[in-house]
Image 1 (cartoon, helix red, strand yellow):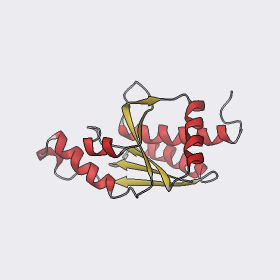
Image 2 (cartoon, rainbow, N blue to C red; image 1 turned 180 degrees about the vertical axis):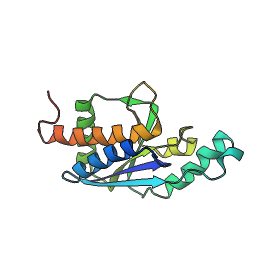
Image 3 (cartoon, rainbow, N blue to C red; image 1 turned 180 degrees about the horizontal axis):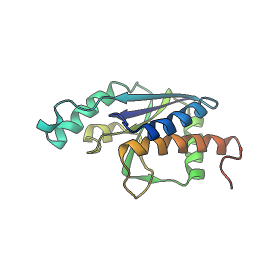
Image 4 (cartoon, helix red, strand yellow; image 1 turned 45 degrees about the vertical axis):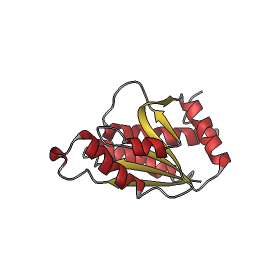
Length: 157
């Protein structure tokens, strides 16, 4: 099964980009992974938060195909341990479908339209992280989950 990660905006920090690229490269041994980076909303200083979220949602929706399961990375989402996230992924793989899509929104979160479209919400932590850091953390956890599912020693339990 294919996994897509849709992100709004650029990372801009070389050390985060390098870390993310390392885990993306490692993921290639396990599955098809597609990272889609969307541009920041233009002229955002003249827009309200709701207008920005709406424009981001429009861009995000163009990258989602019918039959794909969409999970938003959201602070109010379900939290998993690494093992639980691996089990969650295995269940998604077993159910089949076009792809699993994870979405990291912009700084204001998601529009109501995206919440309605989503299959579910996932939280990486109760702590707040920058959107740039979340990308690397998520890709690392995805890689960790794949090693757990394969019984490999990356995860030491």
